[in-house]
Image (tube, rainbow, N blue to C red):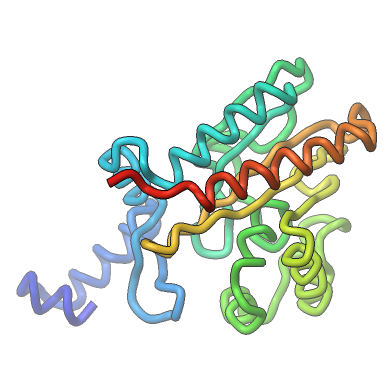
Length: 226
């Protein structure tokens, strides 16, 4: 805030209100180390348009579109805003029974959804503890009931490479999610497939998991065109 005030030659009180407003609408986010600000979801979206198809977001968007088309289930690309996950893009599958939180819907607590835990698993335990201020949200009985339980689930996500949720985004809604990172910009996004758990057999669930992991691997090793 001090640096911005000096550059613009405006009072700190004005700059504070401006930066806070920009953070509230998604143009800015709190920096990961807790000091200052970093680009928010909306700015990242503008950057994706400018990067003409080479961005992490657009590659995730394309991957989820393929997965949704192949599986028939809904898919989402999500980003972190504070301690919540918000949907950036939504892909409706062929399945007439569509489930999940659609764009413009309620934000999901980052510790209580598959996309959020996939995202948190890219951070170390100390950073997760600091982000959540040592407290879990537990909006549903299926969500982690303590910080220790959350960290145990995150360890499993790191081991498997994917996160899952059951009846957290909605009753009877299952989700599988992975997170991808752009090492050049430190941008992290999560994407997932959601489905009605009552209609998905174990064999299909395993197939969906493998497809997600392959999509993640493809995105992470795809170099940027120069």
